[in-house]
View (cartoon, rainbow, N blue to C red):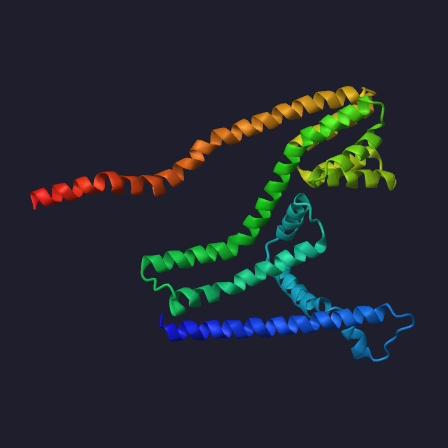
Length: 309
């Protein structure tokens, strides 16, 4: 690519960035002024346009665009896809409807960007690609645009579920100690939540809130199990429900559950350690071994070629 094109692109990008920064700064200043005016007693706006301008710019400009994109995504997605995405967001700890709408809007944007990827690879071609390499790069971009949002969402779900598995034994240990010290289950759970922050504590806190709002403990714990979808949490919930049903001591059940969860956490760590050599095999074969062969066998091949030529 010629230097003039690069310089022109940098100038255009810098100009756009400066314009966006100025617009954002002015919008922020106007938002501060409107917020100050809202705090005045008796402040009223008679003009309809001025009333609309009192709303933040995100509600006036960004939200309608996102709503339109999300509606477009709902129209062209397969049946049940939106429900599956909503369930995944619940597993990821973000069960709001706005998160699902933003995800569908991002999906629409990524699909729209596919023609731009075609223009970028074949028409603009800043990397100077050609032939099969050009086709592979275009295919990778298309796969990233189509599968990227779902892959990121699945990764967040896996990370949160892994963190729930890791934190559960520690919370059960503190819960067992608190119950054996004489506290009730809910009081011990409330004290444990304040001592161990994290996503699992947030789920227990929500469960306690549902119980205090009038729901039964069994229904609240089953709802927590459905929100997490973690086998270890399901085992803990079933054990507590059985203890309540048959009148078994909760302290004894918690002691057995904490020991079992510690064993499962150790087994999970051993499983990950056993998978490490298999995962290291692919980068070693395709990245380390070729360079090693070049360093070790390369001089010998050159000597053999010189001797026989």
